[in-house]
Image 1: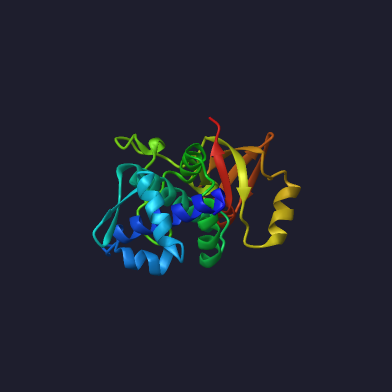
Image 2: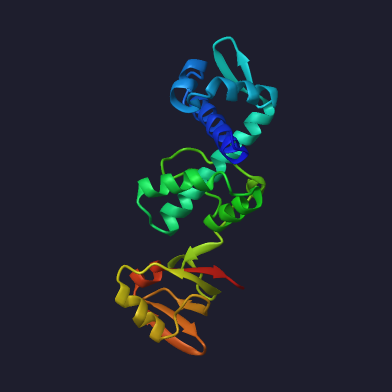
Length: 221
């Protein structure tokens, strides 16, 4: 079996055991062989046991400490990827899930933490399942604000750099661009009421509340 395929197959089994345990389902050997492990399942599980990732206890398969640590990483990467694809890119649920299944195998812990911070340390995935916390989530005694927020959530008087825009209509992108409102530009929110007013290179512009919700920014001061 090719090493890359072996690693991915191992991850799939570890993730399946985690998810079954999380859902209160059994982690029987027969169940894993039927749904995840495939024809080479028994050999693969024995290899995983020899590597210290699982324990074979009678008819059940249990994660070891090392296996559980790996499972947390895989599940965390998967659910963060789902959040990114669903919330930021607005991809359909099925496509988000399929792509997250690929991303979970390649995201490093550092990249996962960066995505987590970018999203504001979300506690759950789009399906409501808990996202295992990472080192970046350790400061639970304080409120953690998202790194990237809609312009509508920015505090008046704050400056921010436009990260991306998600307008409902393509024509709106061209109109905003004609005023210099493009990714990379630094703007300052002057007020929210009675209308949103931003300052860009010394020029004040009024925008609709709907537009303010479609422009995503990162605070710079």
